[in-house]
Each structure stands twice: as C-alpha cells, then as structure tokens.
Amino acid sequence: MKPSLKGRLRWLMALVIAGVTIPLAILGYRRAVQEMNELADGRLAQAARTVETLVENPSIAQAMHASMERSSRRQTTLVIPVRGSDCLTEGASCELEVGFQVASRRGELWAETQNLKRFTAPTASDLGFEDIKVEGEDWRTYTTSAAGTGDIIRVAERHDSRAEITQMLRVEHGLSLFIELPILMLLMGWAVRRALQPLDVLTDELSRHSPGNREPVVLDAAPTELSPVLSALNGFLDRSVDALEREQRFAADAAHELRTPLAGAMAHLHNARMASDWSHAATSIAKAQHGLASLARRIEQLLILAGLDAGAASEQRGPVDLVELIQVAVEELAPLIAGQDADLDFSWESANSPCFSGDFLLQGHAAALSALLRNLIENALRHIPKGGAVSIHLTREPQRICLDVIDNGPGIPAPRREAVFARFHRESGSETNGHGLGLSIVMRAAELHEAAVELRDAPTAQGLWVHVTFPVQEMMHEVP
Image 1 (tube, helix red, strand yellow):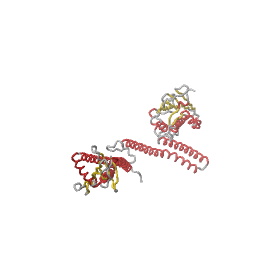
Image 2 (cartoon, helix red, strand yellow):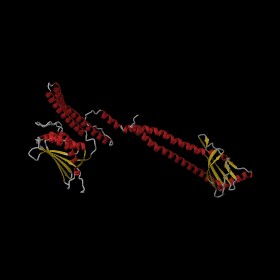
Image 3 (tube, rainbow, N blue to C red):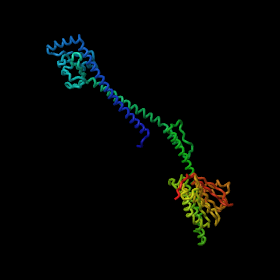
Image 4 (cartoon, one colour):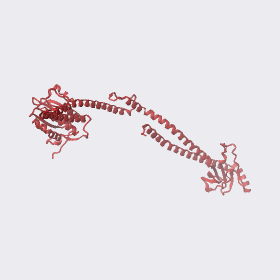
C-alpha cells in the first residue's frame, strides 16, 4: 500500500498528542495521589492534636484519668466503642477505618478505640508517621506526645480509604484518556481532510487540464504554502507546452526538409539501376552520394539543434578555452578550407598585457560553443567565392569576450538580417547548398550563454561581419 499524506499526518498528530497527554495524565495522577496522601496525613495529625487537646483539658483529663485509674485497678484498658451507624460510605462504616490509642509515658495503655484492640501500646519510639500491618491489614499511623502530661497518643487509619481514592483517581485519569484519544483521532481526521482539501481541488484542476493548454492553474483562496507550488507548476506546464510545440515544429520541419533530399537520392539510385551504360550509372550514383552526404549533414545539424533546444549540452557548465575550441574547429573544417582555396586568418588580443590563452576561458557548455564556432566558420566558408578570405578574431575585455567572424562573401542586406536566424531560412538567390540551420544553431547556442549576436557589414565593401559578445567576469593572471 502506498503511503498516504493524510494518514501520515493523522498518525503523527496522534503520536504527538499521545506523547503529550499520556505523560501529563500520569504526572497528574501521581501528583493527585501525592496530594491526597499529604491531605490524609494532615488529617491524621490534626486528629492526634485534637485527642491531645482533650487529654490535656483539665476537666476532661480528670474524668478520663479517673476512669483510667478505675480501669487500671481492674487491670483493664478503657475501650471506646465505635459506632458507624451515623457515618456510612457506600454501606460501610467510615469510623471503622479510623481509631486512636492513649498510653502513659511508662507504656501503660489507658484508652483505645475498639477497632485498634489488636494494636500494641504506642511508645515514645513510635513518634511520627508509620505504616504498619496488623493481622493482614495495612494501617497508616501518626504518633505524638502530649506536651503537658507526656501521654503517648496514636491515631491510625486503614489504607482502604486511601486505596479507594487512589483507584478512583486511576479510573478517572485512565478512562478520560481512553475516551479523549479516540475523539481526538476523529477530530484530527476531519481537520486533516479539511486542511488538505486544496490538494484535492488541485488534483481535480490538473485532471481537467488538457495537454497543450496554456491556461494557468488557479485555486481560489489558495493557502500560502501552495502558492510557490502553483507558481512552479504553472511554470512547468508552460515550459512543457513550449517544449511540445517546439518538438511538433521540429518534427514537421525535419520531415519537410528530409523528404526532398531523400527522394532525390532514391531517384538517382533508381536512374543508376535503369541506366544502359556505366557512364550514366556512375553519374547518377555520384549525384546520389552527394545527396546522401547533404542529407547526413542536414541530419547532423538537426540533431545539434534538437540538443540545444532541449536545454543545453548534457554536461554541466565548465571552463572552456575559446582559442583551443576555434583551433579544433578549423582543423575539422580543413577539407572545406582546402576545397574553397580559402585564406583563413585567426588572431586574438587581450586587454591584459601580456596576453594569455587563458584570458579566453569561458564558463559554458563545450558542445554548444563548439557548435556555434563550427557553424559560424563553416557558414562563412560556404558563402565566400573560391579563393576568398575568412578572418576570425577574439578580443578580451574586462567584462566580456568578443568574437568576430568576417568573410568577403555576398553578405546579407540589413533588412533581411533578422530573418536569417529562423530555422530552414535560405536567402533567395543563394548559390550555396545550405539548409538554413547554421545561424539558428548559432543563435540558440548564444542564448544558452547569454551572448548577443549581431550581423554587420564587413569593414571592406563586400562581405558579412558576425559579432558575438559573451559576458564574463574579470579573471586575473600572474606574470610568470
């Protein structure tokens, strides 16, 4: 079974409440029992003081001592009967649970209540509170000495009464927990469902949200905690719609762009198979090879563009040396440079003196920057006349790196420069076999690095000047 957020909240809240209420109930029970015992001990001490007052009262003491002396002559103890008819608690006599004894300082027992006849006479060594057991019954006693006469007075109470109160407290505290906790669980379940109701509303809203729908998900009176979730969710949905539309456009454009060269290559191969002599077949095969090579390059560019559209190169940003990257791109394009008999010049300069190759380190995606440089150089080489020139120049400034690629080709008129960055756009009248993807790749790679791309007229009368500006932070180099 999958874990439920509501269930987790219920159990966590129940554990927290139980962890608080149960110790508090136990503490309250123990405190109540302690207070009850202190109150009962105080009652025993007060009863002993009352008997002491009676014993020390002159008139009462004289009568009591006379009675005690008569009993003493008969070698008997004055026994005070216990009458419980006027004091009944649940049918039992409360007086039977409390009694007292009075003894002389010499240990002679003068008087006692009937229910304490089984007790021995109190002595001076018994002063204070004491728990004793007589014939299987537990008693709590308090013994004191009369200040005037020196008589020893003991007041005793059976533990039954205290046990009944303790049992009542135990039942009261335990029963309240057994009743409160289930009620609290039910109330917590209702509170959790009520508190998480916006999540159910959000689920219903998302289930009704159709694919490709750009309308944001809105909840009336959404809780504060859901606001960032809604913002992130709406941003994700918007990006997902953009990605879906981009993929749909890419699929449609790719199908359109690949259909023609593939059909042409298949037609040339068919002609080669149907040719009556080898010369015609060789010509058709050569045309098919040229078409397939063009198709391979177009597929490569489409894959690069798809990778850039997906967000960036797969690796994380890292230091990339633009000088080294340009040198690698030039080496890769060496066959094209030789085929065009082009004059390619590469140079760099920095505001630092002296200039280091490390001045042109850029935090970025190596694959995306490599695609940008390769397409800029290749685009320039394909548009220059045979024997033309391409100039590549890097300039390092405190807060930026500037890349300039200048060719002496036909150039692009200023009104149409913005349109050439669109995918599959090809200038009318262009004599090259380009596919209209090179500058799209350049622009996408530049966007990934917050770079600006500008098309200018070449410093000479003819040609195109591509100026790319990469923002960077100033890096200091030590002179060796």
